Length: 158
Image 1 (cartoon, rainbow, N blue to C red):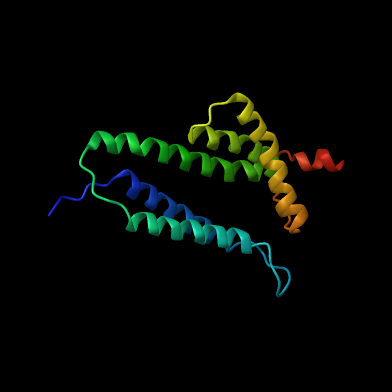
Image 2 (cartoon, rainbow, N blue to C red):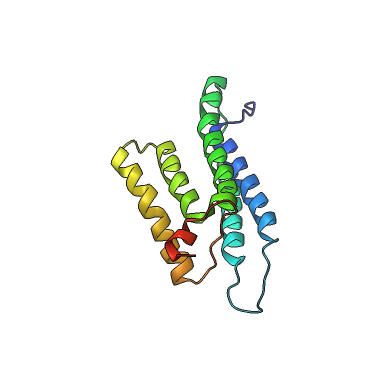
């Protein structure tokens, strides 16, 4: 029977599971003002449960791996993505959704191997715009406003 070594797939699954569960618990604090229909906590709860479920699937499919050097090399991208995720959530609270997404989108794409400067600049512009149009304009979900600064205040003229 082979000795079980924690590998990249297992670490990724565990990170997804933990982050998904933490975000789910955090989303229970979102206040529901109306009964019925789609409330403001539906998308965060659904997304966090989906992330946790994918983490469980990832853990179930993880295979034993033998090299500790491979383990160390596999942890770094996972830690980088988890760090960007936590920093993104913290930045939303202080800088608002648009600025935070403009910073996080190119960072995540860079972690996934996109190195084109033009592509990263386009991601910083189009990702926040597309997500804003889909969620806040199209679906009517209220955007999280920043405590220190919010670009929506500038755009909307408040």
